[in-house]
Length: 337
Ligand code: TYM
Image 1 (cartoon, rainbow, N blue to C red):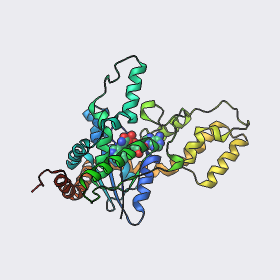
Image 2: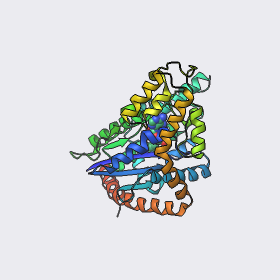
Image 3: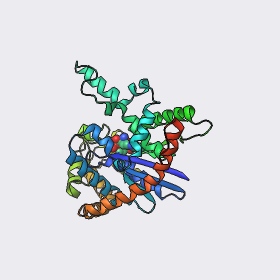
Image 4: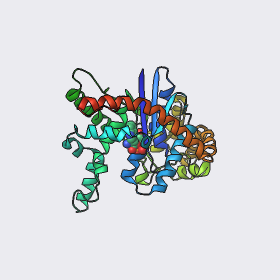
């Protein structure tokens, strides 16, 4: 059985990049026969970036509703909230003790924060918590707890999966005594949509304020966001270069190969950017409009979402608890009785 696992941090609502990079490929992978899937709300990860309890709680509901609305089938997928699985922070500690500090020094999120401090003439570690620093180890525990083979993520998470493999290998080597406790996971990155660009052409990200929301703001919000995609100033009728446009990259993420070719051809023949944006809107809305209706209906019943998550947690713990007992024993801690 191939295990597929992915998580999303609960610090806000999702944008098209999260959908195209993680949610959509993960749901597709979960439908393959022979796959056993684990999708979760990474709310321990949310604490690293967010100290607003209400926001974390609302976000958890919104992200859970998004997964369900996008077609996640809870009879096939173990769907849970990270913080309902206490085995995960315990495994994080076991892994922390075999992870080299030097490796964590190289993690992109931490290095980025240090570089920003240096550029601002501050102390390199100003404002950096241990949570941010050891973030990749918590993520490794998420993945290794369920021995996932494949992790559908966007390109920005690739380094974390590499680090997970290293930590897993080290643990196996130190404590396995011939047994491979942990599977070495592979990142499952869809080449073409590994990094969906945002309004300004940089990676779509909440922190760049360039994101197109998936459901928030409704169809109107989607249209307004698309209207703000930056294009060159070529006039209607003037030939446009489709390969230099991130609007086209976003279009590609939702189009069939035939639609992609046609759109490019029309731009070369002078299609107006305004009209191109209308086509982009129609294309995206056709895919996500029906999901948005389900999303709104789900959000009206938070208690149902809660019940689904608790059921998922019970399924997840039935796997995590006995596995953690073996790991405790392997490192020399008492087995749970
Ligand atoms: P997060 O919450 O930042 O993002 C969720 C997923 O969305 C992907 N993504 C994108 N994909 C394509 N284009 C973009 N512009 C774009 N922006 C975001 C991310 O790559 C990610 O797949 N640390 C993770 C959450 C996590 C996790 C895990 C993931 C915690 N534990 C275990 C996999 C396995 C994160 O913060 O993702």
